[in-house]
Length: 371
Ligand SMILES: *Cc1c(COP(=O)(O)O)cnc(C)c1O
Image (cartoon, rainbow, N blue to C red):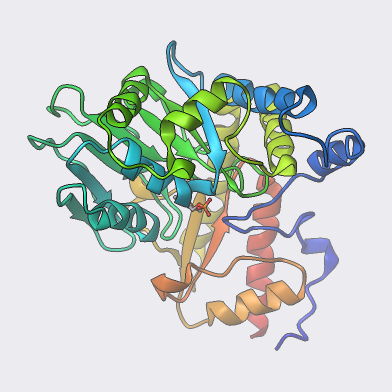
């Protein structure tokens, strides 16, 4: 089976379609290489590195058209660490979650397990559908996911109408941020990690925080709650203001993310990125709708993500296709394992060329015909 050789003429130029870690632009790696002797292996308390942290924070603010008073906060540990940070530092007592996949579920569990917080409300929807937040008295944090990477469902970022005065909205934008449109005034914390649409490497969390969210962090800290030092949001805010992180960051990750944001801003910023992801989405969903053996997993077209596409297969073994693709250097099209479906999952982040997505569909057809 893995002897199927896909002709070079129909293969994508770049065969990386992973939803995270995702494609890193070779040009970014070359820029990193150019500063390898002056930047890598140097102190994160000195200008050389702090300038890159500053470039990253500026790049994010520009890219997301950050409103007045919002701040870019970052620290180590990726989005998984941020869930713990938010559990300790942003939820006052009661949270409500919209849970429609594995990533949303993980944050909900962190809050549920915290002995100092009340039982959260969780609105759940099965894989491939969306759950939504609803106004509820006593809720001080609402949390949803912009793009659920495990299923390929995306929802708009919108404040909860009728929510208590001062309630915060937290949006997991780890994979949606940079591919999907957003107005940051509609959320208090838009948090992400650099290894998805931002086309860098993993290890950091980054949060664009509203003044109300920053105020909440200081309020909870002042209340005397026990907060592990590494997960202290106030420390992260204060360190970020100084263009540094509490402990040693991955310098390459910082640099590649800053480089990628500069590149995306030069191309036209978020509106350019959103258009490019939408173009890739039109290609892959259009192909699946016409195909005799492939269909978009998300049946409601409104919920179909332009950041990560999930395609179901009938009568053809998707795992076998992914295996042949991998043997031909087209990698990471496997579905999210826990979803357990006969499907492929394809990242449509702005780093990925729409023409490469088109080439991928041709390769899938080529392999399916020969299996
Ligand atoms: C990848 C991902 C995460 C986890 O990010 P880490 O940096 O690996 O912790 C969380 N949420 C979403 C939506 C993701 O796509």
